[in-house]
Image 1 (cartoon, rainbow, N blue to C red):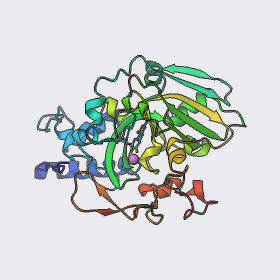
Image 2: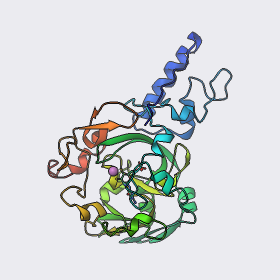
Image 3: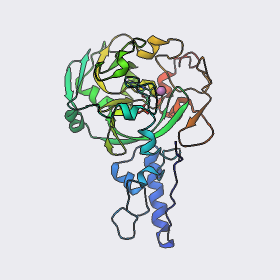
Image 4: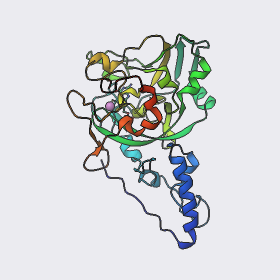
Length: 322
Ligand SMILES: Nc1nc2c(c(=O)[nH]1)N[C@H]1C(S)=C(S)[C@@H](COP(=O)(O)O)O[C@H]1N2
Ligand SMILES: [Mo]
């Protein structure tokens, strides 16, 4: 992977005040990793794009680490995010997903939301885009294998969708299912995995504001290899929880089975919260390789989102769950 370049924007003395005010506002917005699409472009220079003297944002600027997450780490490039993937329905080779998924038809697409809900509903992709205001969320994605990226997703909180279907009081968990069709997904011909890919969250995790359904990245529609047309993103958990190409969301009473915990229950738990102190049985989780960087960096508890999510697990022994 190529190293992201940081472009420095020359600042004239007359602009210093503007720059200062601009930055503090941006720090504030960044504190939650939330910036609108306009802010994404504005982040490329001290003046708004289009104002005289302001550098125009170009697609290249969006890919060069000109913007950062709330911990001040540069975003990974569009190139890196879309050419280094885990998508076992297509391939187990991270660099082949982009190639093998390129013809995937993600339209038309429907997501059935069903189970223990008062208003079961099937959403077309257009309904999802229209009914729920799309936001940008800049999140770290930490794969259980020990690599990570910073990705600017577009999408909306899963809680907004769940509120529409109105879970009953029996609903305690949410189950997510990826499409099953071995004719289009070559990997689903492998008998080693219990297809279709399934994942699950506890209802309070699913309702947490950080949990989103992503429909795009870098302001473009979601590429096939990243889970088009709609995928889950749960930034404080290992990447395998963030299931791609969802066709069904089911509210259930019991903890659902997941693909990875069925394949290897001692290696991939249901909770799978990022935790540097709980090693995977075959490797340490204390550090990680940020794609685009050389060397390793320390892994953060809950992937750096502890302040937001630690309360969800106050009754759990964190050393037992991963
Ligand atoms: N349906 C499905 N979802 C999936 C996977 C998969 O193989 N199939 N891989 C998971 C894993 S292991 C990771 S790390 C992330 C990778 O997401 P990305 O390719 O967008 O970076 O997707 C997750 N979601
Ligand atoms: Mo992963």
